[in-house]
Length: 120
Image (cartoon, rainbow, N blue to C red; front, side):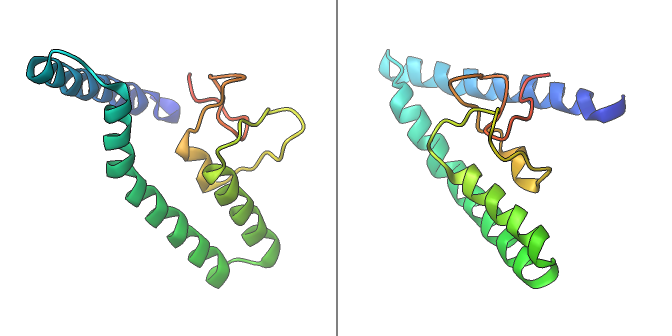
């Protein structure tokens, strides 16, 4: 299937199964579900990998890319780490490795902070 859509669908099915299983286990153990604790555990699990990826990408850009390309990568890294909701109109849109981080914003949850579609 062109564009990798089958892989994305499989990823979402497996992720949904895993998340549901974890929430059901918590329900059986505690008779309640704390979404706050759930998201804290996810951040502690996924955060180090994201930070490692972004630091590696920054070092790669510094060492191997021309100044303009490196500047785009650094902008993408900063936007990926941004906690502020960004509108896709009027903002920098990059074709960057950072767009894969899929940080969706409240204004348009079907798009990430760089205006790329998160939901196909």
